[in-house]
Image 1 (cartoon, rainbow, N blue to C red):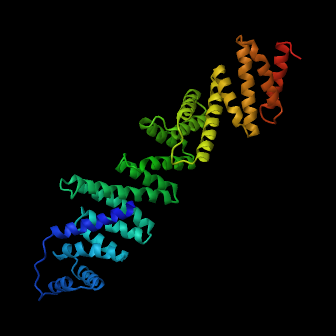
Image 2 (image 1 turned 120 degrees about the vertical axis):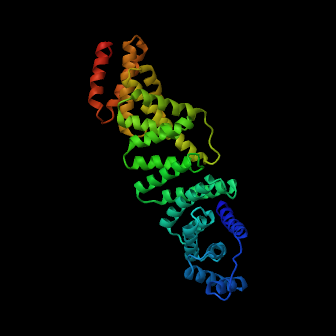
Image 3 (image 1 turned 45 degrees about the horizontal axis):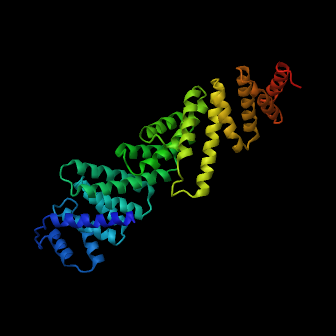
Length: 369
């Protein structure tokens, strides 16, 4: 729906420009005057287009060229003569760099031809032309200029999504953010940009982008997940990891299902995010000797456990946390310390050997059989 609304704007803008430009004074005895006279008198639209193309080809520097192009651009767009529309638009831009209608025509023609490279080029160009027009102090209509830029932003975003090269995708998404930090497509663009960084293994830049999003949207669980995963991979700041894990749990515990998200998809996402937050936050708390928090979070992760390797890690850290709490005076923790180490021993993992030693130590220390 939005697409066709913008196409309508192109036609309106062209008509407005045609109405504002002075009608050429012609001498029908001259070659260019004769052509313009024929253009004015021709009733068949296709023949009229041919005559206007002929004029633009033969007289590319004539003072009446703008008047001809004002009519040629909407006519070729309506006729879906994409190559001619693109050439007419570019010719108009060469003589009037702030002509928004011409830049729109180039983008629409590129989209009509399904020419991805041209769509990318003219989407960026259209936004810049519209911005120059807006800053010129004489925009045709501020609301219309804004609509045009939104149209351009959409195609910049789509070009980024379709880019096979991650570097190209990153460049286009950055170009969108640079042009309009408040673009309606930027939220999706930022998510795509972060996924691109992650696919390249550039977790630092992914985290930096996520932090920027969180500055304006502190309850964005997706960005907290990016931050948590970043600190998990770095392994150098368990306190920040624990913070983002806690925020994910807090947000998802209160957040209702978005209307646009199917129930099954939402429940699956919540399960995945909550498990990751409980598990990562619990391990981080254990490493920071916050054993009560570690015990609480790791127990909360138990219903989600499926991977044996992860199960072994959770059981081991639960056993360790409960042992340390018992050592600090909570003697009722001893059975759980023993139980979780025993569960850990049943799974082949890097924790198995140490868990066996822990079992022996607990039994000896607390005189258990």
